[in-house]
Length: 226
Image (cartoon, rainbow, N blue to C red; front, side, top):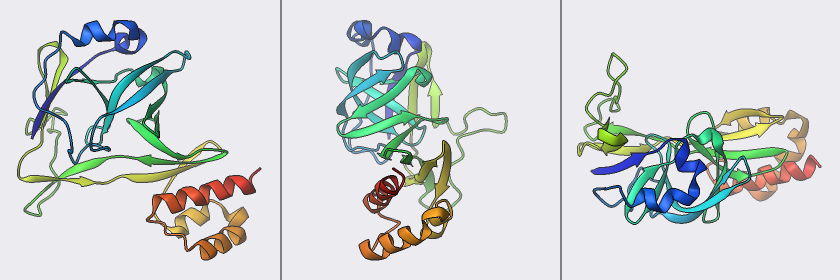
């Protein structure tokens, strides 16, 4: 499996009006649809909102292996760079915000917010250890990712490896991000409302493996927190 995209620096975000003319000069190979390392089956219309308040529309998707936001225009693929300039990215009805590594999807927002960190790894079909994309010297091993002339990024997923989703859910409380994976870990973060939350969970049969259930639980916490 192979696709080729290009990367750009600050001008990709700051000079949105030049985007169409820049994209016309690029080349690509392969079509990125229904790939297991993409969050959505197909690229969708979206909007990039910058911290300056400026915004522009683009057709986007999120790549989980390298945790990069991708843009497609006229069949050509690009990375959104300089994410420190980005405030929010909206793709369809889904909202993404920049974090330390890549972007996280906002599942519920308020005084307490819920996020999904979309990510994946490559795992051998033979049951061996996950594919190591870094060499001992810090470079890339196995040529999973390489950069060519002009910043072309070429990603190759070996045919004997599967994409395994390793996404994680985070909750932000009092400005602090906390990772959790089960009911016990979650309730430990909200001991002040333990009684109310246990009652809600029992009444609604909340499944902590179901994102919609967890999102509704966080919305309930924000009702308690008004």
